[in-house]
Image 1 (tube, rainbow, N blue to C red):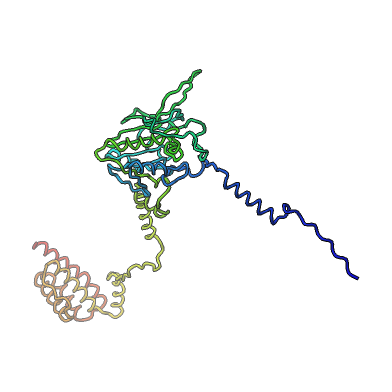
Image 2: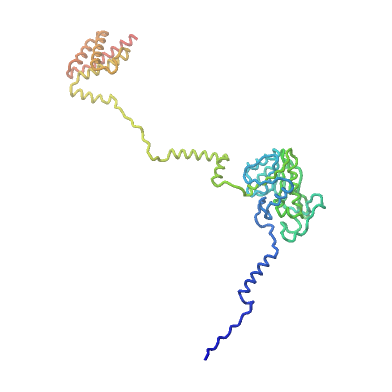
Length: 438
């Protein structure tokens, strides 16, 4: 007897099988993405007007256009400015504001015969103050700027939708330039826009400049109010002829000088490109290159010197040792007591007589005993001194005799007390006699 066989499972249709459907859907999505045209946004991406940017808002097309037309475009990646009459510096809407010193150096370059292509923006306020201009209101370009040769220009009205225009519609909107003070060195207006002015119940249109040509010293300046004039999509779109206006600006800057200005240097350093110093380099540049930085550096050095002088030291300073010698007068009482205890009348008398001899001989400028002589020499000198006194003043014979006896034999205390008055009389008498002789 055989077991019953299992029933067969129904086979699912192919369009519900995941192994077949999911790869087919993925391939279809990829194919649609590849064949569908993509419109590039005009106001998206990096907004810096840099010649290194090929984005719609960049200026790489203007860089290439100037090279094709005979100029020599270069890029400056540092803050070292080359001042030569053949150089046109292009400072186009700088993302990093220029310092007052950099602005002054660029204007001096123009006064010496160079050229400057300036596009106003947030980082060009120092130029606006120096030139007396400012960005005004917005205006419209209704008519295309051309070169005067209509037949030689071909401008398709439709580019196939590959690119989106910078401005919607058939008009281009640009900022205008206003004068803050009377114009100086004005030459010409290279680009004009129409601004609608409304007064009370009426409105009218007036032409305002969007690009000015100025003369400064021996050089030339072109001031553009709006960075859109030089953007890639604006130069590419020939409906408004902004590429022609950009070339006219270069032609004006190249002419009018003894040296042809064919070198066009794009300032990429203030667009954020190039090598830049770190924090330590920036601090060093501030301390070295500005008056306030130099003052701060000097104050810091002075503070460090004062801190080093007041700081605790590893080895404490020691005062030099001094040995104080006691005055001989402090020993008089001690010597007197010692001499009284042993009855040293002869020694005391000898010292007293020797002191009297020194004082008298110093006053008389008499012959002195040689230094370092022995005790016997002092005794002989004392005897000769007493002999000389007795010969000069016979009235002192009694006092001299007392002194001789005290030098040779010990005296009682009562007789020794008379030594002091005797010495006083001898010294006073000799001093009076010296004054009389003088």
